[in-house]
Image (cartoon, rainbow, N blue to C red):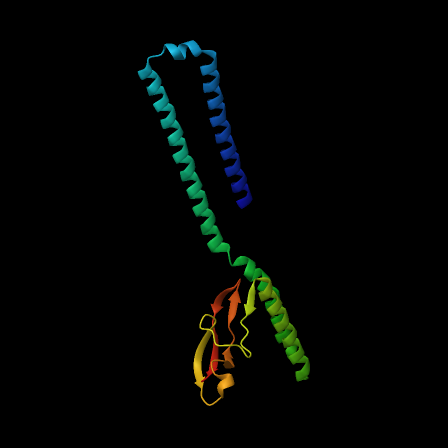
Length: 190
């Protein structure tokens, strides 16, 4: 349906352009066929005709811009409404795996099998997130950075080498395409 609407809009724009081009060619042909008439016209009439042509061009440009503005507004609204669809489609296979793991969890008594299954699902989920541009913020032995870390605790007496460094990560932070979407909650050495 959306593709048909896009095709219709493109066809309408092509038709409008062809009409404008044919009108311009007709005007040019008339001016070339009757150069003596153009010279014989009163300067006031020539100015009036030029004003009308410019007014027509102006109105067409305004209408064209208005159509463009409406079309882009509509496209933005569609992107906002359907923008998360790709992310959800990428995450759904992980949800399916989780459901299978829950369903099959009651069939086994071996906790190691369950643990391995959960680790596989976790790894798959990480790959999906990486495919969407989401990456973990590294906190291990990192200097505290207010742009990517949120200090929730200060740990005294850790020594000078740990001063201003991340001691522990309480909640993992994430970036999406180099933009922080969740700050890492960390404990910092004093």
